[in-house]
Structure formats: structure tokens, C-alpha cells
Image (cartoon, rainbow, N blue to C red):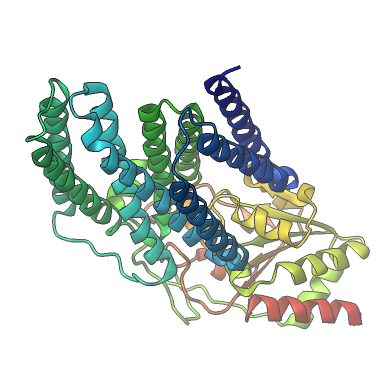
Length: 474
């Protein structure tokens, strides 16, 4: 049995682990095991690629390879262990950018070797441009989410500028493919083509920056997902170049998953991908920061922790709506304690999960799973909306735009048409926020002025802890 056949079998096994792991990631109860299975498959593929070569490598290459793997593993492990749930989108963006950079570097290194082959040079240029756009775009997205770039920079005619940059980049890549792929290239011509490839690299990096820079903060999760699909495509190009089936499979899975997630998020916000890229809402709005009256004259009604505890204690059904504020306050564990305490008193407790609650799909699911909330209690928007009419108390913790009735009532609102959690249909609504500041989309929330709504101001963890103490004293 030759080494190539064994390597192909291992690649097949690794590809199956990727598919199985991705499937298991769809459920919080199996996600950890799915992640381990996929990681095991990747480790197996890496070791097979290194050791099952037809010709052994020099010892110094093995030392450098495993040193790089060890350093990357340690850094990745430490960062992933220490990152807070609120910073998970930034981490995803950072890791995704590293994947794009790897794909671009592979293409740059392989470029001189494949001049003269139309198929190979087309693949190399695709990996170079897509990987570069993914890298620079992901770095800008990381800085935006991390607070390093707080403003959305929108140059005059930025759409036209971006399109011109993209056209020049694609045209240059097309020329390189045409001139360097149709016929043999002499040694004297290689530096010329290599310089052109470097220019294409620079243009692609610049385009990635310009592509993401003007996009509003509320749309950034969609952009991260889109860039993630770009990285998958770039990795697939590398797999095609090397005839490496496991690299090709992994890239296709990442690319398709990123694309599907992008579509799902756009659907969850009722926005087209075109409007996300070129419209960019989330950079301003009619927020009433610290105010107590709405533009329509409605007023805000406060409620105390004690009154909230009494209301919940005598309820038959309570629905909790978690949002980014819950994650920021790290209140998921004490929220689970509140849930258990209410259930001990015969209250039916559920969690309403909006598809884009938090900073990315699944953010709230993972956050609550971290505190051992039963997955069956997490109810998706389509299923929980009909139940609000029979709900005694809706407790909104840190969520804002996903419960804003303006999405249904105000055609002038930037979020008009976005599917929301229809909490206004409940008998009583309690909103926990630090202040009256606007949410991620930067617009005022009509729900705060609803006669059935009471505002419970304060840090989520502190407020819920006090709620638990009040209930225990009853």
C-alpha cells in the first residue's frame, strides 16, 4: 500500500470529521463534542501531510514546522480560553483574518512556480485577492467591534471609489492571468509578473479596508460572516492548487457555511446584502439618551426591584429576553438562578431568542448554555411570538432593537420590516437597561414608552442578583 493511497484515506476521514463536526455545532448540547471531532480530524490531516510525504523533509524544516504549530497552538488556546463572551465576535473576526492572510501568503509564495499554467495561475490569483480582502477587511471589522474605530468613515462617493478600486484590481489580475497563464514565461519575465502580483496584493488589501470602513456597527456581524465565507473560498483555492482534498473540503464548508449564515442574518434583519454593504445603518438615529419622554409624547415609567419580584412571584408565565447587555454584565449565571427560583414556585419560565440577538447568531444560545440553562427553554422567535399574549411578564435584559415595535409601526425607521420579538403583546413588560441610550442600531425604542412597560434601570448582574435576593425573602 503506497503512501499516497494512505494519505488519501486519511484526508477522506478528516473531511468526514469536518462535516460531522459542523453538523454537531448546530446544537449546543453536541457543539463541544463536534468541535473536538473536527479538530481531531484537522490534527490528523496536518500530521499526515507532514509525515506521509513521498520524500522526507530536512530535519530543520520539521523543527521549524512543529515550532510554528506549537507557538500557534499555545497562543490560540490562551486567547480562546480568556476571551469573554462579549468579545467573541472580535475573536472570530481576528481568527478569520489570519485565515485570509495565510491563503494570500500561500498564493504569493506559489505565484512564480505556476506562471505559464492558466488553471494554476487563475487559482493563485483568486486565493491572493480573496484572501487579502478577507484579511484587511477582517482587521477593520475587529477594530470596529473592539472599539478601536468608533466612527463609521464614509468618504464622498465611496461606493464609486470602491467599485473603481475593485475594477482595477480585477483587471490587473485578469491581465496577469492572460499574460502569464496562456504561454510559457521566461526567467527574465518572472520579476515583472511578481511585481504586478504585489501591486494586486496591495490593491486587494486596500479594497478590503475601504469595503468595511464605511459599514455601520449594527451591520458588522453580517460583514464578519461574509468575510468568513471569503476566507473559505481562498482556502478552497489553495486546496485546488495543491490537489489537497481535505483543504478543498474545509474551504468549501467554511465558504458555504459563511454564506448561509450571512443570508440568515440578512433575513433576520429583513435587509438585503446589498443594503448592508452600501446602506450601512447603525451610525446614528433618534436616540433619546437619558431622556424620559418620547418624540410622540409618551413617558417612561420606572419600577423597583421589589415590585418586579412581587410581579414575577405571582405570575404563571415569565419570558426572559436576553440581549447584549446581559453578556456585557456577565449575568447569565445569576439569570439561571432566577429562572430556577421562579420554577420552584410554579412559574413557567422560557427564554425568547431572536436570530440576531447579541453580536452574532447563536450568541445568546452559547451564553445561556454556558450557565447550564436547559436548551429546551430557549425558544426561537417564530415559536415564542404566539405565546406572548398568554405571558404575564416579559423580562427584557439588555436587548433593544430586537424588541422595538418601530420595526412594524414606523415605515421611516431604519429597522422597518425587521422581524422582532412581539413582546408588546404580553400583559406586563419590564426592561432592564443601564440608561435610556439607544441600542446597536442607534435608534430610539418605542417599547420604552408603552403603557405596559416599566423600566428597571441598573447593571444587569446587580439587578438580577437583587431580584433573586428579594424572591428568596418572600
